[in-house]
Image 1 (cartoon, one colour):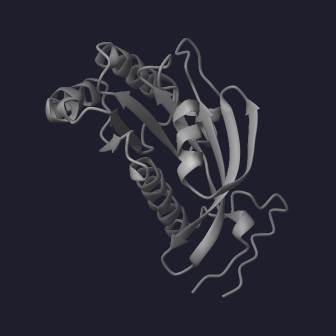
Image 2 (cartoon, one colour; image 1 turned 180 degrees about the vertical axis):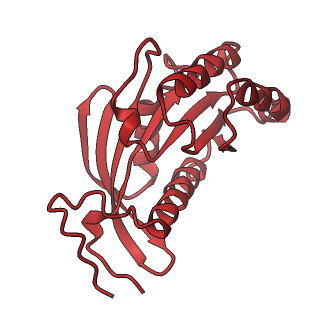
Image 3 (cartoon, one colour; image 1 turned 90 degrees about the vertical axis):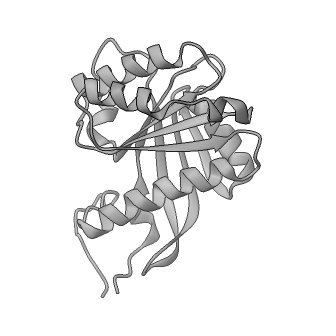
Length: 199
């Protein structure tokens, strides 16, 4: 079993939203903070947040994760945050008529400027269950296919639920960290580059 300093575990997604004015990624994270146990929340800029929170990981138990969430809202040029991203999270507002059009812009941006091998999490958000029931997953899949993006997962979050958002964000974090642990990419925050492990 591998044991390590918890400060070496990090999660760095780049986030997008199909309804930036009502549900920006940062505003969604603020709701996440209200329902989860996070610490050292630091708003670097309007589009960049660092924070820590504890999560249970197989083989390691409860560990503290250093998180860096970065939001992209302009799709006109490449952004260096994409180079360090562990994954991409797209918050898809089911209740906005513009979401499909915005999704197409976001997927084109990922295809043009990002590592499109990295996993994309499409998190559909809603407050009215009727919108979830009328959601066409096939339509969304056709947008991914059109942009030649195959590594994605579709999740649903009820924004009125006190813990649904937390469960989904934490499940994304856990999945990415497990992948990093399995591929020995978990020493990202080791600035000394010593790569020390205690086995």
